[in-house]
Length: 454
Image (cartoon, rainbow, N blue to C red; front, side, top):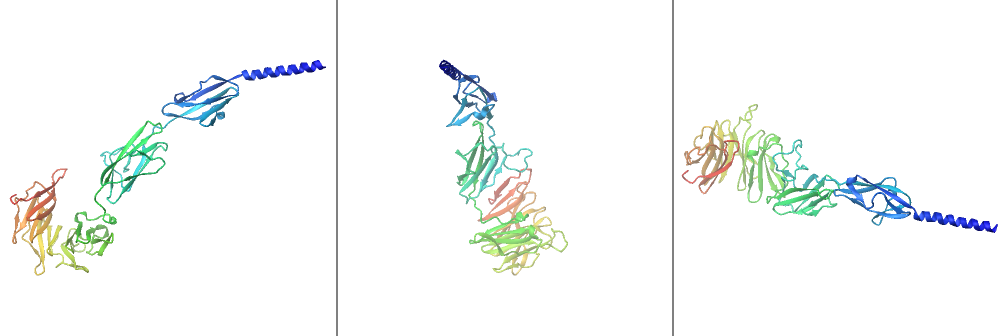
């Protein structure tokens, strides 16, 4: 009986040592797959065997343009991440798959804006089908941003198309910030926006030129009527206050004057003051005296271009007419108004000729000489030291001077081959004219002066 017990104990111990020895000598195979194979490798070669209970350290190595994403496969969920190291316990044969993901190569912006400032694109041919949108992801230059003088800085808001891409502005990484703030200087400053794609290699650079003008806004822009008679804006400063006069076509063609007071544009004497349906509105100031001239609407039911001129001045309290109304005796247009030493002068076109009238309290509105030209356009009057001058286009520029009785041409009449939009100024007896060359598709702006001979 005792012998049988000892035999059983020896048999048990022999089997225990046998199986324990088998476990210690057992090895397990690790199968590693790559998805996709071009995405990268793993530091352990597929098919490698490890002793039982070995903890294998795994390191996925991605190729350029790829990154490791996750472990998959039959035992992928058993891979653990500890202190920056991937680990897997080999207590049996195991199979894992290293999954790699290709990095994005998108280095474009989907939007770009500045605050303050309006983005303008200067390229001649916008991409087809892109409508009126200014910013285009694939256009990296031709952008400018005009910015007014008062601004001390500009905020640049670049938005990458890929949220994982890096954005740099003038060499500074934007990071999690929404915008980059750039101090401004008067003149031009280039703003460079560089987008670096996820792959770290693909980049795209955008350039915007911020243009801070030395010109500053005077108050807020006046709420714009859709149509202003833009050829007849009048702007004057009386040494204390800035005045602006214009004809507002949205407000029944009424002339209005505003002045800049207390940091804002305000109506001067109520703003609107002329009759309705006027044309050729001219606002003028001499010193602190305000004047205006315009064409009356004519008889009820008559065409808009039928009417005669009336002039007004402000007496310090209200607007009053200067002499008789409609003093140009029939249909007239293309007015040019000037006042010197309190005497108003008006040049105008009637029946394709140019006429000049002046106002005298005793004589009323009276003509200076006869009508001039044959097919006149764009007459302009200027007065210096009581001497009137008039310039006009008659298929070419002509300038004449009034000698007290008649008009005398300065040099040849029609001394240019063509001319339009003429402006006249006289300084110290020397006349100057500015005009557009009316011939051809391109109309250069020229300035000429009279030297006393031609």
